[in-house]
Structures are given as C-alpha cells and as structure tokens.
Length: 340
Image: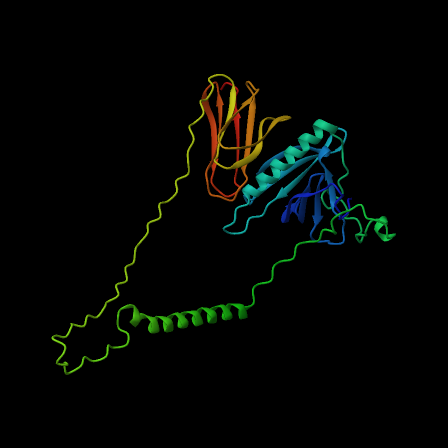
C-alpha cells in the first residue's frame, strides 16, 4: 500500500471521488507516477498503489446498467493477470462517457511509456480490490523525517476525501431580491425626475409683457426650443469562424485525419505502437499498418462547443469516422483494415 503523500516530482493529473471499483465505492487519483484507489467506506485504510508497469491492457465498455466502465488487466505475477473494473455511475441527465475516455487515454499513454522504458513487472493488489479479507485499518502517519523535525521529502499535504459544498443560505437569496427591488425603485424615481427635462417640459417661461414701450416699434416673437432625443440602433455583425482548405488525402497508405480549430491531444495506431498526438487545426497522420485493426482516440482541450472530427483513410478511401461537439469531448474510433 502506498502513503497519502506525493513525492517531490509527483503531480496529480486526474481525480474523482465518485467511482465504483469491483463493487467498492472508491475515490481514484491518477498522478504522473501511479494510480491510487482509496476505499471510500474505510477512510483509515491506506490507498492501493497501482504502478504503470503493472498495467497490461486498458479497455473501455459499459456495465449492466449502461454506465461507462474502464477495465484494467493488472499483472500480479509472471503470466498472471487480475482484472479491475472501474465504473463511472451516471446520475439522471448526466453523462460521464467523456470522463471515462479521458481516464482511458491517460492510462494508455502512461502505461505504454512505462512498458517501453522499464518493461512490464507485477504488482501486489490487496483486498478489497481483489477477493479476500480486508486488512485491519492503519492510521496514515507522516514520514519519519517529518516526525524527527527534518525537512520532509514531500511537497503536498495528505490527500483527503472531498467535502460536499454546503448549499447557499436562504438569507443570501432574500438579500439579493431586496437589492434588486431597491435598484428598480431608484431607477424609477430618477426617470420621473429627469424625464420632463428631456422632452422640454421643465419650468415654464415667464409671461410676456402686456405693454410695449413707445421706443420699440415691434415685439420679437418668443420661440420655445424643443429638445429632440434621437436613438441610434447599432447592429452587431456576428463573427464567423475562419475556415481552412481541406487537406488532400493521399491515395496510398493508412492515414488518420483530425479536423478541429482548437487544440487537441490523443493517440492513434496499433496496440503497443500508439502514436502520440498533440496539435491544433487540421492535420494528417500516417499510420504504418496493413490488414490490422487500428484505433484513434482524440480529446478536445477546451470547453467550447466546436465540432471535432476524426477520420481514418485506407488507400484514399474513408473507412471510419467520428465527431463530438461537447466541451472537452473525446472521439474514440476503431477501423478494421483486413479484407472482408
């Protein structure tokens, strides 16, 4: 079991406190060094560490309730694997497919890099994540260096379960409504006082004299000035996003085409030979494959509703495509290049 601290070079990539791992309500934390599973039922238990070199395969699917699921095949001994299913429960009107796909992409990337650099090696998986008696809980303690007063090798405080946000007090809502009412009353009073002067209905002019002096031959007429208020309406022209010319598809070889105005990341290729992708705009990526099954997983890096399209071509012919418009959405497609 690992500890609740992060090392000096470790950082958190993803975290969630609402997953079910092999029927156990859990919290999952993914760092750049390991995957940690925390039993939400027993806060005193230390988390289960799963190193990337022990992850053999990463598969996505759905459970019996049609909730998104992530299946990890873990190497527990030479030639022996243990499957752990991580389910992302969906509340009404909520979708967690994109979240599941992001976890799958990150785990695939990190496990592939670890296997390439260090090779695969087994890890010990303990209950409750595998069948067996749950070990007695141990209180999480600070490292010995911290107890002795020396400088700690860890840079972050202990990880703790997230606390739900408290609902906003009703008093704040009442105060907000009262503030709006006061503003409306002030605007009405100002309009009542200022409106007459805007339309020339201010103080009346003094009355004209009833007698004309003998030295004045005529009386000049009195003209009342009228103020005219003219409202000029402005029309805002909607901005149309610029489009780029489509890239020509080569007529030989296998190519993955990504079309998106913003930034995106992901992988494309064959199991064990995935190509990392991090780009922006429309690009073509050649995949060295023939008569095999290839896959492409691309994720948007922004919160816009712009459309991301991913296409797979073989010798100039489109054989598979997918698209998504959801913020930070993911397109995950597979293509069988084998002849039917």
